[in-house]
Image 1 (spheres, one colour):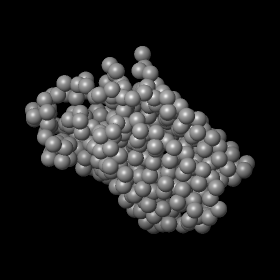
Image 2 (spheres, rainbow, N blue to C red):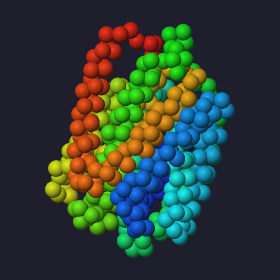
Image 3 (cartoon, rainbow, N blue to C red):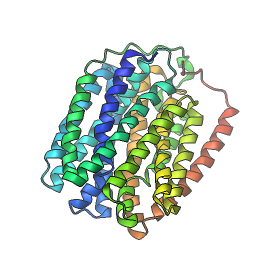
Image 4 (cartoon, rainbow, N blue to C red):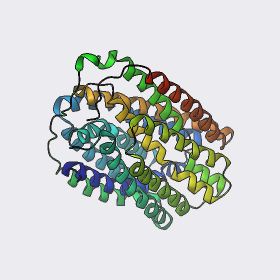
Amino acid sequence: MIPRDLLLVAFSLLIWGVGEGMFTYFQPIYLQQWGANPVTIGLILGAMGISMTVAQAPAGYLSDRVGPRPVMWASWVFALAATILMAAATSLSMFVIGLLCYGLTSFVIAPMNAYLIRVRGNWSVERALTLPSALFNLGMVIGPILGGFIAEGSGIRRIYFFSAILFLISTVMIFFIRQAPADEHHETAALRPNLLCNSRYLGLLGLIMLTTFSLYLPQPLTPNFLQNEVGLPLHAIGQLGAIGSLGNALIGLGLGHLSAPIGFLTGTALMGVFSFLMWQGQSVTAFAIGYFFVGGFRLTRAMGLAYARYFIRSTETGLAFGLIETANGMAVILAPILAGRLYEADPRSVYLASLILILVLIGINSAIRVRRASQPAFPSNRV
């Protein structure tokens, strides 16, 4: 049986996923409509990455001190306000301010994941982290389809008004979650160094950052690629986005039982399939299959957090997750900038570059797993 508070968070994310999915896949196109070129779009998305990064570690640290619930509440309310600002924007600069404020609210990720671990009951860490993510992406299956039809009928701007209504419902729901209990599990603290002196954790942190960079590189300008190079209409791009969200949901639900190291590697490989099909694909069917495997990105991120739990103290969970999201945010800052440069030179080169990086990382990850298999392990944090 799903624990009550985990279920509340999951359904709140389901509704939020519908709202966010309505505009996420059209955001680069909307920026283009405001007059931004590919390089400018890449810079704006890179700036959004900065806004997504700066508060991650502080929010995780605050979560360890005051509990994750108040931080989650603040994020939900602030994100709702940012969406209203984007909907009301009458200029590119005003819209970008709203976009950056919305990105800032991603500081919720570390506190929310710490909360999910605390309220998971007898569920494994991997399952507790992947199920809410899967429901969020299930909501995003519906969102891009609705967003595509709204965009073609009333313009992309109208999408943000509908999203704000859904976000309000999600916000009301999240205020019903209860205070999280202490995170109780058996560990030998002496065998786990302080976080910033923990070489295993820091090594994993670097691997996660490089992996996120490689997996995110082909994503930001794919809607522009599909519209400008392939010639797909907005509603078709929305449908591909829905397929991507369906892949996120099904891959999360189907592979969430994997151990964190295997799940991390599997998600990376699935994103390699996406990059290959976008690079070599010549039909909508190929692009649709590729979009389905975008689910590997979410799986990898969730498994990266679960992986980190193998090496950290429970009292440092929020900060550890915050540092991971900071590393992810730095990757999200840099990847769109490089993607914009590559796209201007050759739109398909973005996918080739990503594929090469992914293959290299799979080799590195496999080598690390072989090396660690011969080393003594810390006592497990999975229970």
